[in-house]
Image 1 (spheres, one colour):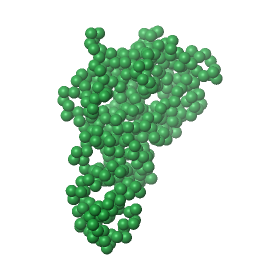
Image 2 (cartoon, helix red, strand yellow):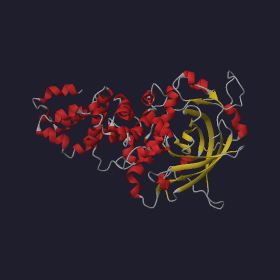
Image 3 (spheres, one colour):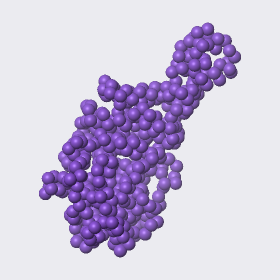
Image 4 (cartoon, helix red, strand yellow):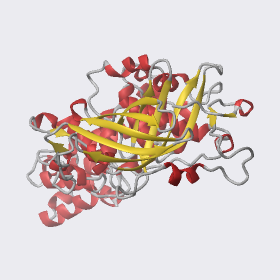
Length: 460
């Protein structure tokens, strides 16, 4: 469509047309589906002063650019979050298209673009995605560009927060992105493995005050750890007969609303706390990992674990406040009380356990709980955060013994609690599995099939 009008540019025939017809032509050029960035519209505006003023500075232009933006990117989140008032659509369009083009060039090997990519514009597209945005990210190779930035650039140290949440989201659309987190000598590369298992590695992520957007980067690293294991392990389902596939999650802007509120609007509600604590209720499934110091310091995967959690009052006489999920935005994510107590029960390869925990919204939704095995009475501490829609990720144990964990929601909150008798069948190996079915197993996370072993797990 744009090429049809190019022949008219030089003679300024367009400028002499009736205004109504001229505006219709401009709209057709502006909404050309073959162009992400409206290059033809920009060229059209340069043909004469009248068109330049009409397209860039007239009162009509204030309606043109929002329409150009809506034709290319999702806008439901902009309106729901009330960002559309005074929003500079033309500048946002320019920033996004420039960031996408830089990512595409970087993915093709032009590493001069590594330090000029506008990652904040990339995250805006992710956090506002409903239908269109992720398609642009995939088509412009944003995932491979972010992977290259993780491996090669200055972003490998204090600026991990820029990259990890982006990759954690996009791996749901391109599972091959896990290749950036593996190495020839180890299933999980040293940088990601350090974040996953070295408690002191948190300092790589916590000292950068310039990064104010994205999911919690450390939780994103834990999620990427498990996706890398499942993407790259040569025989995971053989090593763990009870192994269940991990899910991939389509993104939606509503799942990112809490992240947006904590990033942009928290100061506007001084008497309330931004919260997603009610999401803790429901049936969950997942895995946890640890390092075995007695086995050449290998990483081990255990699970799956299943648990059911429910919100409970702090006091027996206290009533549980009904969820405000049906309230309009942002009040559906605001609470006067910053603490939410929960409890539950579950089963893993070690045995049945109970859970008691707390969601602390004074710490941006920090989730902590104690997991106590029913038979042995052994207790382990877990801490983590929501990274919706992927679920909850964190660390368990301590500096001497522990590792990352990830759980995702699998059912409705009205499901009955899991008990030992009802859950044992969930962990029965397939009929083709040899050996006693009651023996729990784990798998070592090494790249060589010769080192894949199935052994009795330690309780955790």
